[in-house]
Amino acid sequence: MCSHPVSCVHANLAAATVQKPIVVSLDTTVQAAIAAMSGVRAQCSSDRSQSPDNTLHLEARSSCVVVVEQDRVVGILTERDVVRLSAQQHPLDQLPIAQVMTQPVITLRESDLIDLFTTINLLQQHRIRHVPIVDDQDCLIGLVTHESLRQLTRPVDLLRLRLVQEVMTSSVLCASPDSSMLEIARLMTERRVSSVVITVPGGSADAPFHRAVGLLTERDLVQFQALELNLPTTLAREVMSSPVFTITPTESLWTVQKVMEQQWIRRVIVAGEQGELLGIVTQSSLLQAFNPLELYNLAEVLEKKVNRLEAERISLLEIRAAELERQVAERTQTIQVQAERDRLMAGLSSQILASLDVQVILDTTVRQVRRILGCDRVNIWRFEAEWANVVVAESTTSDLSLIGEHINDTCFRETQAEIYRQGRIRVVPDIYATEMSDCHRDMLTQLQTRAKILVPLCCGDQLWGLLNVTEMQPRDWQPTEVEFLRSLSTQLAIALQQATRHQQLQDEIHDRQQAELELARLNTELEARVAERTAELEAREARYRALMEGASDAILLTNTEGYLIEANQTAADLLGYDRHELVGMHFTQLHPPDTLPTLTQAFEALINREHSGTLSLEFLRRGG
Image (cartoon, rainbow, N blue to C red; front, side, top):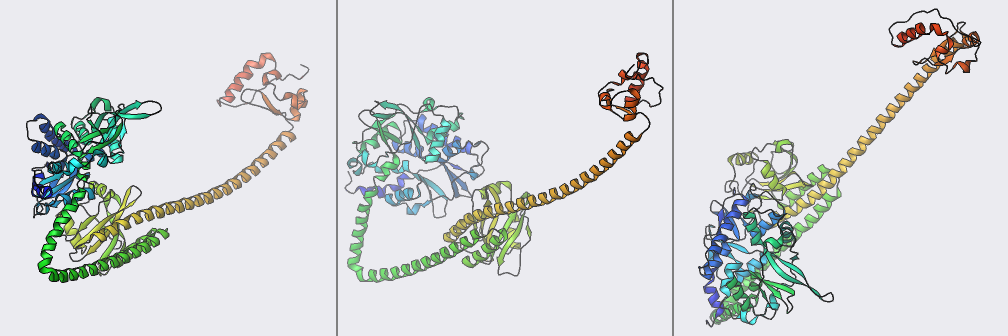
């Protein structure tokens, strides 16, 4: 056994690089990427005669795909991303990988791949499990993962000294065997875990516990997607890995390492004496065991420094002191600049959120952003129909004003709008050194733009517009500047939504007031018409009464059924009835029976508007 295990790990670290990772282009669909991952996985499962190292590398290759454009790494899609997309039930056979890949990608140069602990810390710091390895020209040459790093831990005696209970994860995500695979995928996505333990109740009523009966992982979900299983209808009990491999909390991590290698698994369940679920150990747990080895690494570095200090102590101290002074000065300046920006950001946020006028918000934003960043131009574009833009606010040092101009970017499409709506920020240090279409570059040249940061502005779920920060010369935009604009866009989204709702409320109030005024006007007109009509009816009624009462002729009125509805006093006197007695009688009751056919025929003709005329009829008085 090597007397310096740490040095051995350093020397063999290059062996952890997985050669020929799966590479796809931006237009590859997610389903095609899953098929590629599944194909490598199938190769690993079908050929068990391979060496453990080759097996580990195949396992690592099947866990992700790297998206490359013009030999540069632009994105990555891992098993965890596939689980997330499965939980969201996206149509993976139509979904371009460019829309869902993780970007930007954390990479590591091959020349920097010299220290195990630095590599492990990089994975843990960014909470990732894959790091593409690139050469000095940023071209992809390999991949380092938890799985590939695991092989370096074999000769390290520390695994024999550490116990499972020291590194196991006690908080385990569990589900029942009757859970659907869609529910499992959503659980993994929400809790950001790589596996779910399938459990059933155990123990007694006084001391209940969960007993592990199966395991489902991100890799299983990838396989299910490759097989195009129906996740909502597939139950966990039908596809879970069972039986599970268990160990006790007092076992050493060396035992865990051996179990993982022998059984070709990446997770081991920790169970108690009665089979109760206590936790889980993963490859990440094994890597965490190496954090204490940094002390050995530090001691080795210090030993070398002591040797050098013996010969060059004074010179190195002077150089170090000067370097520290420079770093302190730079750091102090950076802190002061950041503090000033934070102060201005707080003031700007207060001004934005305090206003309910959209134009005031926009004008304040462009003016203050140009002051804080010291750039040539800041303007805000608002989207209209067909993704045309109009400049609604601007602050610039140039004589060219774009306010009110319509910016018709023919290269802007619905797909780009969706990417911006998801929060993408476009950073361009130099339009002539950045990949873009010729039409877009020509448009930027006309707008006096050489460098820019384009930040989406949303109102609710809708892409409202773009915050455009530009320079007439190339500019190396700093991460703090990009983060400042990202934070500002969040504040603007709140303010725009607040102002928009306020404006909508004001418009509703105005419309309601106008409606009330119109209703009052109509009521006034209606009342005037009613009064006029009432007067007209009263006059007509008066004339009618005068005619009825003053007429010397007998007048009888019937409805269309022939029943009397009114009679004047002359008719009542003529027939020998009181007026109220006549009302309700049928006209046939007032005539002799032999005249009724002629009278009925004439009445029906009159009702049907066939003709009107004069009839000579006999009436029966009350006495017959």
